[in-house]
Length: 260
Image 1 (tube, rainbow, N blue to C red):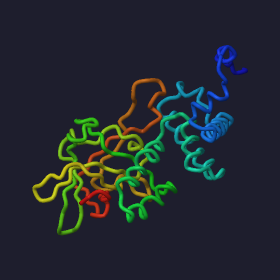
Image 2: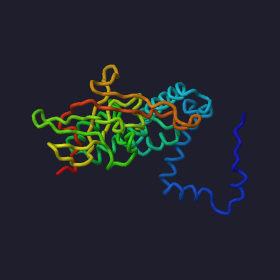
Image 3: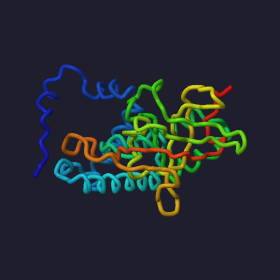
Image 4: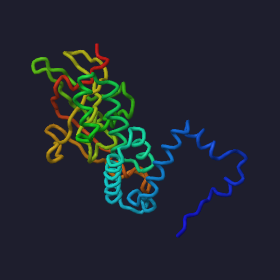
């Protein structure tokens, strides 16, 4: 069946130059050319089809999302796309996925809040997707009210470690995308405790799942929160829950760029 262009008549009636408007909308001719090239690349690839998305079960939709994310990564490598081009390609796939949080939250958090040493250790693995990360801030009892977060990171001076813990039900991390099934690591936001002093919320890099068999590490309770409202909608994303039972991490996994 031939596709219908419902906007063709309106374009014909336009009193402005459509091609120039495309450039204005994109911000520059270079941006437009990248956008147009990535849009055509996605539209011409049958793996990225989305006409059947609303008819898939949650399980099949998630499998479809994994397949598209893997195929997008394969094409990015094969075509040697730039970071800008890769970002545009993923946006045109137009299906919420764990990669949105990996590239859009996990990596920027490390880049923005980590030290040079932390960049050198974590970013190469993240850029190669040898580890997959998410952004574990939101809690069941507090949403995105950062000042209300209850997860604690208590410093143990005897071992030079932080002990990450969920002291209450409401301190459970709830909703982070990519957490439910895929992520191996997270930037976890928790209250920094030294002695009896609460220093407020800081970020910590925490491994959640084994890199050998993907099973949760000791002290980690993690899973998918299940269906969300809407047919298709955000059900392609594995929003998750996370609890810690006195999980120890090295001191150098606290994001320390701005720590005095």
